[in-house]
Image (cartoon, rainbow, N blue to C red; front, top):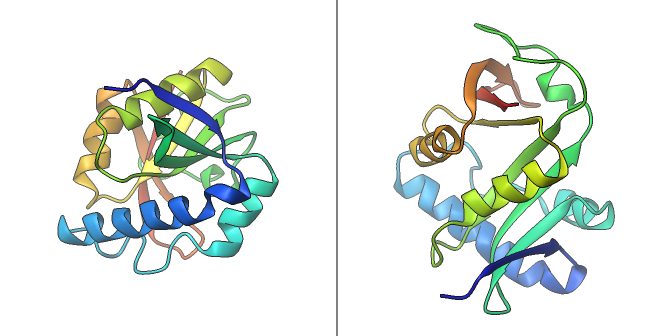
Length: 163
C-alpha cells in the first residue's frame, strides 16, 4: 500500500474534498448518525475559507486524495464552555475538525493525529455521541473524554483532549 502523505489543501483539490465529505455524510447516516453533518455540512464557503487560511489539509495515498481535515491552532470559541467535566490543561492547543475519508484507505485518522501532534502536542477534538466510529478512533489515538461542549447550532458534542 502507498504511504499516506498530508499536505495543505489547494483550490484544485475542491472536487475531491467535496466528494469525500459527501461520502462521509452518507456513511454517518447509514451508521446511525444522520444529524451530525446532515446533508450539507461542511458548507462550501467554510471549506474555501479553510483552504485560503491554510487550515485545511488533505491525506493522499498514491497521489490520490483519500481524506480531509481542518487543523486550527489557537483558542476555539466552541471550547470556551465545557460541561460535565473539564479540560485537562489550559494554554494554546490545536483543534482537529471536520475529519473525513473516502473509506478506501485504512489509517487516515491515525495519520491525521500524528501530523497534528507533530505541530502541537496539545490537541482537542469533539464528535457527536452517535458517531461511534469516530469516538472509537479518538479514544484509540490517546484522547481522553473531558466533557460536553455545544457547537454553533447549540447541539452537544463529546469533547476530548490529548496532552
